[in-house]
Every structure is written in structure tokens, then in C-alpha cells.
Length: 207
Image 1: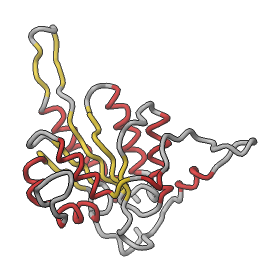
Image 2 (image 1 turned 90 degrees about the horizontal axis):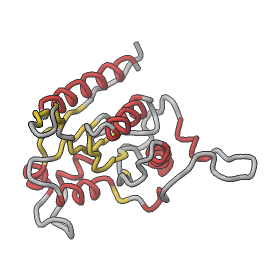
Image 3 (image 1 turned 60 degrees about the vertical axis):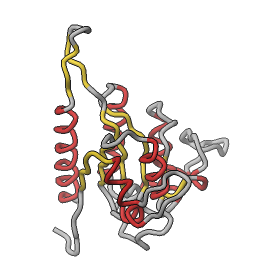
């Protein structure tokens, strides 16, 4: 678990170094103006809380104008994992952020903290305890959401922060031209993506 948080910290420090690098002086407004980072978050929600911390931080950075979160890819199978993202975004007032879901990824991965059960909690009247904004079963596949977002983006304008599995990114790379773009995945990625920050590792043994 300590390794997870250390690598999350490294990935986010690199990301926010990029944010700071995009600062520019606004002569007409008497101060420093920050250019928001156009970003896609790719995380394996549903196990460790590093993903939830990152999502919470990013929702605050949206309010501060630091980040324009174009979409979130949930890179772990299970509709409740996308449901958790919906609960957080709805709570923070950003229910409009598109969410994609991995449906052909890592099978039965280890779950450290099964927090996606909050999606099933009910109040005394039998209603969902936490407000939701969409039906997770209707989420676009994660790699498809990548293609949709990238196809609409300016060249070299998207920053990807990946703090989970690499399945959806791999599927993006293997993807063929479709209704969103005539480019294959590799060419679309090369044309539209500015930077990628990755948290990764292998954890066969406990500390």
C-alpha cells in the first residue's frame, strides 16, 4: 500500500509540475493567469484509495481552473467501479464529466479495499444513499472514450494521467479507425497527446 501512495505522489508531482509550467502572465488582468490542463484520468477504481484521493483532488482543481478534466477511464471491470466515480463527481458538482469503463480487462484482480459497495447502500426509504447522475451500464468502453475525446481535441493538447492498469491504453493503441477518427490508435495518440504520466509497478509480496 505504501508503494501505491508513493507512486501516486510521484505521478501527481510530475503532473502538477506540468501544470505550473503552463502558467503565463496576463498583462491585461494585473496578475498571473494559469492555463488549465486538458486531462484524461485513467485509474483502476474499486480497490485502493489512491484513485479516490486523485479524483477528489482533481475535482477541486477543476473548481480552481487548473484542470479541464475531459474524461475518466475506469480501468477495472465492474459497473459499480464506474458508479463510485459518478458518486464523487456528482457530489463535487461535476456530473457532466464523461466516464468510460473497461469491460475486457484484468480478470479478478486483487481488491485491497472493496469500497465500490457504497453504490448499493440505501436509505430508510430504499433509495440510493448517494446521488447518481448516470446509469453505469451505459458507459462507453474505456478505449472508445479515449478515441472520442482525442478525436475532438486540438493537436498535442491532452495530458493523460494513468494510475491503474494499462489495459484501456493498450486497447486504444490497438484500435482501428472508427466513427470518431480515421486514424488508428497509435497515430491518434501521437497526434493528440501532449504528455503521459504513469504510476505502475509489480507487487508479488507484502512489505
